[in-house]
Figure 1 (cartoon, rainbow, N blue to C red):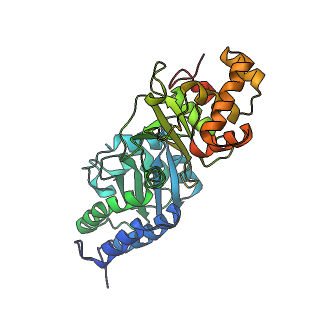
Figure 2: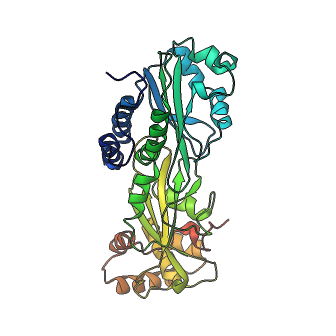
Figure 3: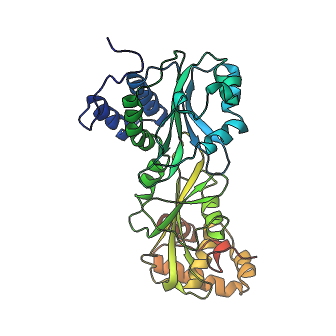
Length: 352
């Protein structure tokens, strides 16, 4: 009969446990369900009485818990505290750092305030924690397991948990779902994922772009276009104020999947403009106002031109799009992403 804390599966890629966890990590389904299934398998390596998986919030210096169970109220208060965040940071956060056990501390546990004040009173006597890093080195968070038995994980169990950590990271990586969304934009040449606080983060698989930065007008307009509940919107912008239609970029904004940890709002990509149907720079701007439902008089005042000139632009737009009304032209422009939003008429940043 195995001793608690001993490894019950052999090390190596052919281990049934490793193969099973790899399948769970790569599976579809919800992230919480994947985490629950993986923690259940980890208990075969180190039987534990409490566990959590927490991810670092990209906008705030705190960890959000995907799964947390087995802790009393006082221990949970510590896990939610700034003290815990500091303790996690002091642990190093390096991909090369092995899992840490209580028995690996440089000094006796009774000299560690967090252990003495919160975890030991909850009945825990041993534990192990490991950072979660992606294959490209991004820190995601941490997984910790605690037991009420004073039996530390064996060296073999520690090493196996370390070897399984990349699988856990892949299972919980929030970028998986947003990258899948971005992949639906076949001609994207650059992109970012935008958090609910407006931070633009690198999107794995796509390079950055100077217009796709935190606080940029293009990012604000793109996410604003989704604020009405749309899951997808496309439009045009110019890379510089001086660029004509041929210097345009097609911007595609897609709502991020609604799943834990819920801190991504949208994926924004840029790519070639595609077929402009012969529309001029001014006609694309007029289309942007038609999309917003503006009448000719308001368009004329906004653009500083006469109503007669606006009417001529609308006539040319209808002919080039082969439609019979301004309403159908607006619908076509939305469907084709064939308009310049009013706030982007000067390029990638809103007009003052």
